[in-house]
Image 1: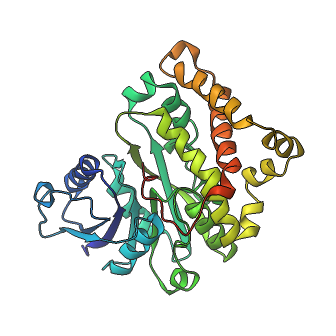
Image 2: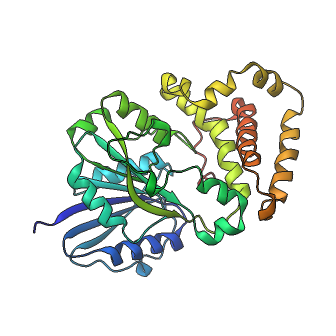
Length: 322
C-alpha cells in the first residue's frame, strides 16, 4: 500500500507544554501507512527542543523561528516549507483526539483541490464541568454528530486551528492567509470568505481537537474579544470591506443604538463593571446562563470598538497571543 504523506503546521508562541502534548498524541496515532512531517513555527520562545519526541522514519519534526509573531505569517511560512501536498493546520493549544490522523487521512482520499475541511473543537471535560465560560465556548462549535457530507460551512464557522486542504496551484493562486492581520481575529474568516468566493467548498470533518489553553482564565477570553473589536475588525475592513460587512459584528456596529451608547461618556466603565459581575460568578455552575456570556463577548468587543481609534496596526502587538 502506498503511504500517505501529510504536513502538519503548528504556529506557536510560549506553549511548550501543549506542543509536547500535541507531538506525543500525533506520534502515538501514527502507523506504517503514513509519512508525517510536523512544522513548528515559533517566534523565539526558547523551547527546549531536546524535550520534544524524537523523529523517526515516518515521523519528522522540523522547527523554525520567525521574527514576526503573527499567526498568518507563521501559517504561510509553514505551508511554504511543507514537503507534502496534504496540509493540516493546528494551533499550539489544540490537542488531537485519538482518531485525528486516521480521520484526516481518510478525508484526504475523498476531497479535491478546491475543498477546505474544518474539524471539531472541544474542551477538556474537567474544565467544562468547572468553568461556565468553557461550557459556553464548547457549545459554540459543531460536534462530530453534526458532520454531514457535502453540507457546506459558512465562512464564519471555519476554524484554522483544525483545518485541512490539498496544497495546489488552485489555492496558491488565490493566496493563503492575509498577513495584514496583526493581532487577534478574522484571519480565518477572511480566508474562508475569499476561497468560497472563488468556488472552493468549505466542509466539516469529524477530526477532533481538545482546545487546551492551560488553566482557564475568563479574563483572557474577554481580552480576545476586546482585540477582535479593536484590531480584528479594523484589519478586516482594510483587507476586505465586503466580507467585513457580512459579519454580525459590522451589523451591530452600524445599529443606531450601538452608535448612541458608545458615544456616551464613561460607557466603557459601565461595561467593565458588568463584565466583572459575570466574571465573579463564572465558577458557580448553578448560575450558568448562556445569555450572560453572549453579553460578555459583546461587551468586551464594544470596549475594543471604543478604543479602535487609539490602536496603531503598524505596531505588532506581541502580548495578544494568549
